[in-house]
Length: 483
Ligand SMILES: Cc1cc2nc3c(=O)[nH]c(=O)nc-3n(C[C@H](O)[C@H](O)[C@H](O)COP(=O)(O)OP(=O)(O)OC[C@H]3O[C@@H](n4cnc5c(N)ncnc54)[C@H](O)[C@@H]3O)c2cc1C
Image (spheres, rainbow, N blue to C red):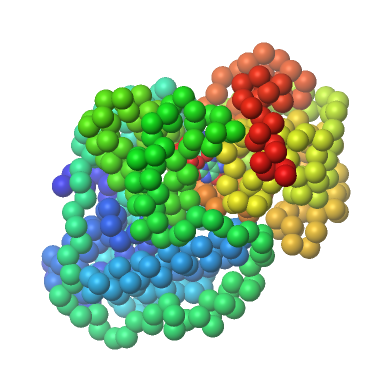
């Protein structure tokens, strides 16, 4: 197993030769029992030391702008995961509280021989993991089991664009395309009782009640099994034609795998192996498989690369100099429309295609990938040229946590904040590096090149309604979601 490059030590402590305690894996971004190298590696270490092994998960709302329904969806998956791990005699410990404090507390109590984390390039998890590593007296490791080729192996710097990261990934791909081992049943018994999720309902309900609701009734089933089913369904019914039809919002010919990939209920490596396998058996699927793998492997790796190397992934400061300059030189351009936060959240602008995209997002928890670009670019087009104190957002609005920041910003900075707030609160795959990068790509030219000059956009790539009309049956998309 070529797993060594997947593991990154977070402190300089070394594994003891022997231990009488345990090894733990703090699961976060990769919520699955199978195809999970962080779990496999932590479990292997426990077996080598002959100590018991457990999986810990810390539930907390904190500063994230995710809606209650997304936590409920995730918890459904965690309940299934608890059962799956139970079959392997591996305890699953759900903890409720601020991750740094809660995990330091449990580390103090358990005195593990080693702690393993899964990898997330976003600021919160990176800081939390470093804090734990600096304040415990055992080795702490992070394992990239989210990307096919680990982020730190692909490149040691922020990559310029897909064309610069692609060859670096290709070069290492063979080393990392290996079938993950199966979990084996744990023989050692965990000392002490571990509370089941079902026994913690009161505490969980109290936490959920404190999180704002977005009133979504999500149609995607949650969990690792549902993720694997969705992958099978895509390979059998959706892969053929993906390359030609994926961009057409009226056809909805996408994999719909992002909820499972985002929560790690499905591994990118599993999706890669199974899609590649299908294409090797049926050569007519080759170009569809290549197009899918480009998104699954290259585009998402580019997102993780960017967030790993650039702390400003959620603001205009993360954009390239040329993009900031061109946006600044058009900051005072006249706006044809200005919408209130309420109009944006409710999807009641004069642009029917934008409203349809917004309704798809708020009602179904996911927007078509092509419309996401159009949607974010329009928010820039409608951004105020000067700060406005807009008090229209309702009490339950996704804008409440950032209302003061919004009333002090304008232009592209405002548009980025608005797009992130809407995306994270309403999209089941939100709060993801792919989201921050998609928003900066649309509004601030990240990973893109300069185009012809336009009002407001400067040389940031522009999209308009006529383009949608020319390329697709946009009326059918509008009728479907505005109906
Ligand atoms: C403004 C904007 C916001 C976005 N927000 C998110 C988000 O919150 N979460 C999210 O996962 N993606 C986001 N994306 C990227 C992309 O639109 C989604 O990954 C895709 O629509 C998910 O649907 P799917 O799984 O059916 O896609 P498919 O086309 O079937 O793609 C399969 C997988 O490849 C990856 N992928 C596809 N497109 C991209 C891309 N452009 N960049 C990086 N990875 C990609 C995703 O993991 C996706 O699940 C955003 C893009 C834009 C322009």
